[in-house]
Image (cartoon, rainbow, N blue to C red; front, side):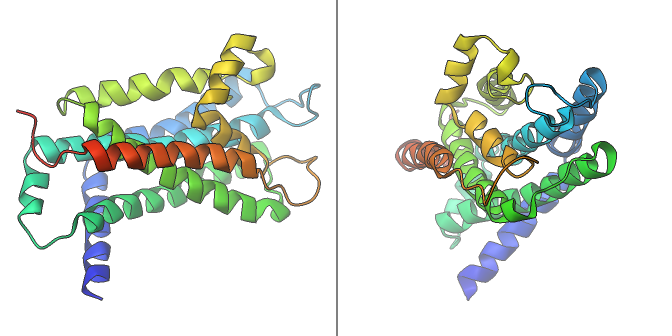
Amino acid sequence: MRALRQLRSETSFNLLGFWRSPAATFFTVVLPLVFLVIFTSIFGNEIMSSTGARVATVYVPGILALALVSANFMNAAIVTVIKRENGVLKAMRATPLRPWVYVGGQVGSSLVLTALMTVLVIGIGWLGYSVEIQLAALPSLFISLLVGAAAFSALGLAITCVCPSEQAAPAITNMCVLPLYFVSDVFIPSDTAPRWMTVIGDIFPIKHLAHALGRTFDPFGEGVPMPAWRWVIIGAWGVFGVLVTVRAFRWTPRS
């Protein structure tokens, strides 16, 4: 019970720190919504001849994937590096707080942010662009969000191992994910992208997350969509992140 109370307190502390950071709030909460409005404004919301669905039906799951990556990968990486370089993690190691409680608190706060962004993105898509959720796909949506949040949280902690300073953390994390957005059906649909971009996107987990989430909004899907093979790929990247974190995670500043 004590460990659970510590976990709850650590999660609350992380959320409080997040909301007190204007930059983190903007890039995690506001920017994905801005992207959704911009892309649907630029490309319209007409029915696409290739799929028979509206343009927003393609962009909502892509932007939701972007929001999940921001809430889990980027937020976890940047916050952890800041705490490490300021000596917070080193001080925590001298307390009775168990390492898994810190990690669990970080993941817990990311899950809360993921839930918030899911409600906001889907709500705006539904109210503003007539994007509807297929009720039969709700279990698939839940699993995709859970697998994606866990995997990208692990990758966020793993990337801290190569971030030398808190100033470098935002640049390194953006360098990792920003190019992938263009090859992962987040900014550019695959049917309009060159073949080489499609191949690169297939290697990394963002595209598989976007497609797994997209099954939830497919108006022509039949039955209960369970993109298990995409979950396996996302999970494999998460396992890779866990292995790197266990082997190379640092609790003390580099300097």
